[in-house]
Length: 366
Image (cartoon, rainbow, N blue to C red; front, side, top):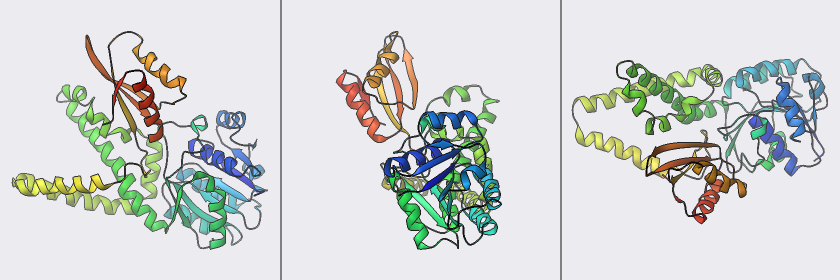
């Protein structure tokens, strides 16, 4: 494949896509663009891209593929800007946004028949950001949703999947409406719930300061996703407004139903409610990547003495095992504390467990 790819946006997703393309198609030339000049220079120095440009028209003119790897609201503006430029006939344009209906409608409205737009959403991410965190295998075994516009034929679909074959992702082709409904249920709305739980805790803390102290454990874990980018989630919610309003109504109905069970003390029904949820949740794949990045945590019992954390991380560094997050859950005099280490993948977690057990550390997975 001797093609020119124009990558607009050199963050985690754009950088990882570029690396996966370069790994599989060494003859492809990737030109990068980002409004953040530091990211742009870093992408070039890390050899994530072959060349960089500072203006859209410079990179778009000779592109066979244009990948718009920026937040959805910005992506809409960029698509409109691209439509005003002189593009190669037959160019394939795609994006990576978390909502699809509005972006596909925009593309169909602004592009001519000679531009083939295919909406894209790689369902993988990381708790790190920026091109420095980019990895060629970020999307391996993840679902990669494609939502073609009316102008994209099976030929263009196959070409794009061929370009992105290095992601080793599982491609699924659905309509933009289907995509937004699915992601609304399993990604967008859960983020709203997490944020609302945090708001509720903050309000109760004004009545009792113990709320903040007690929320430091499990509550903090189950609301992790509330720490995501506020700007990104503002844009996603506004883009998926119609579907989320429908989910809001169903959720409110569900909460009223559970409230009635509690008020009427229907013990068997309450048990059945939790039992049914448990059964469905336990059937979900633990290895398959989904719309929300997984947390691959390893818990390590560590004695309380100076230097223990650097000792643990040193062993992992020796075997080149990268940690995405580290947290001390409990440290008290003369009692073993618990170190929670988070990893990018399940494979990294397994390697870390073998490594630390080799050095006589007790580890466990929750």
